[in-house]
Image (cartoon, rainbow, N blue to C red; front, side, top):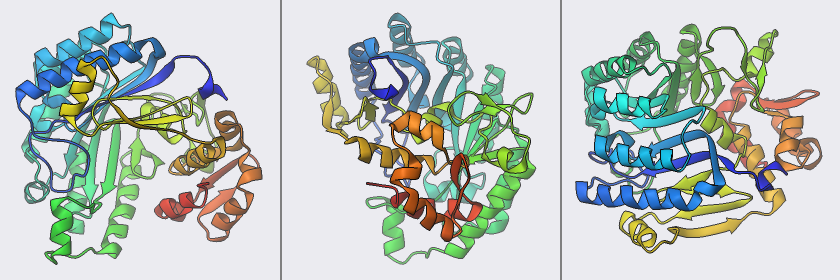
Length: 406
């Protein structure tokens, strides 16, 4: 299996755990922190990069959070110069997540100069009351100003991240947000339904009966998202992700090469050129190094998780050790089942040849009955060379995916 080879890992994820303030819905490991702890984190991250650099030749890099754009110019320069020294720059796709409130022209230019070529901006909503409801620190006006700033700095691959089914959000408000967001002409759009997770203020409010969940409205909002994105020139390639094609209608194939489809079904299942290559690697079960507090990694069949504690993370690396809390070596069949499940989130589904290359298993042998069950429910479609979920099936992707886990 290719991922078990000794070749360097080509995907890198870095978790930046700091935020200006914690959002009402967020269950990710993040914290509002002082400059001193951030400086300590930056030094620890450089040490972690030094430890794994020999095993990295990044084609995709993703700094997520938290709010990576919260780091100041000096902190970013420290990280990027360390990456330059360690020969970790030059990735085909280098993404940084940003909050509109922490975008500046000088910082954006610095990132661009060091090869960052994709920004994912957490907009969530363009309605002031909903932004306040979610605990966001930016205004709608800041979104437009920050988008223009990123364009002036030379970014031509920007993702806008939206949320729907927010408490008190109406269909009219959602349509207005979609109209304004797509008018900005970003290259990528991500949109997620609000999830109520334990230990978040929004979940506590739901439990207290301060609002109720309207599943019917949530489904209608999702259908509106798909319809609106298509009319605006975006191509859906995963449940929550939409991207444009640049230039000719060739696309990134399910296995990473380029392909061109002439049939309508082929076009529906192709992967657009502005798709997030880093996330496609996740959904295709590819290996990646995960650095930073709480980050998970997946390298040569072993899943690791770093401590979800920034102080402890720093202490471990200051001693010259990785800050890994746990590691698990997955049996090949279990690993293949997870790979199958993740890949079904994508419109392209699984080309059988690609799945066999990735896992050494044939989907038609180990999961033939599961594929038939999904097809019988109207959730999936089996063809000679591919299995993918239908439009209806994508709404039930989690339930379908569970059937493939071993």
